[in-house]
Length: 291
Image (cartoon, rainbow, N blue to C red):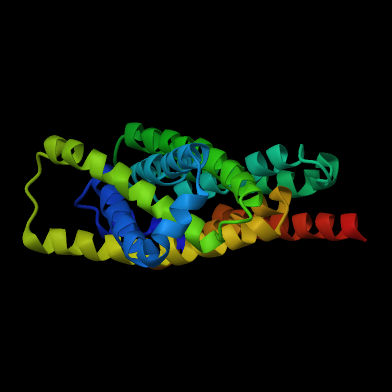
């Protein structure tokens, strides 16, 4: 589900990252409002100002800011490059999670982290070394945006996991819908900015295409994908949660190769194998720690 967000900027290339983020999150917010309406009064009575503040920064870091960075990275640097930079997320999340009480020690996770870092190195070498008909400026800007998305989503992954463990009285589904409401409100605030900055004339077909992509990503990635992620975040330790992000990377790569109608380059194959090996090594470390 989440791998689809890497394909969306290519499907709606006529629009910039801000339009893509606003379209997706207005749809996410509207759908969340409809689904949460029957339980609204009960949920509001359970939330304090602190929890609303957490929802605001989690929505910004994990949705609004992250997707602007991600869309920019895809449009300037390509799907494959962006997906593998985001593939470094497990390294950051696992290192932070290793400080939790009863976490698997970092030295036992080192093989997994090294494999993950090696996969990112492979794709970075492939991206920067590949011939390009254009200038290197946009590609470097795309790479920087990908790392911006990496930092933003690392903060979200850690913060969201810890808040879900704290809020046992709120279901993972309701937390997802509340996040959608707050994200939709942020998208509404950004809407006038996007319209003011847009100097391009778009035809009706382009707007219909943007609406279709936005609703599709909102349903599949934001509603379904986020609900599954929240459930997993409550069930698994943070050191293992980080590794699960690599499945997003794997499917983003598969979608990229299908979209570009090509086979992966040797370094991309190597990165793919290293990503899978990284996940398996992390699972083995957790299994051995419990044995």
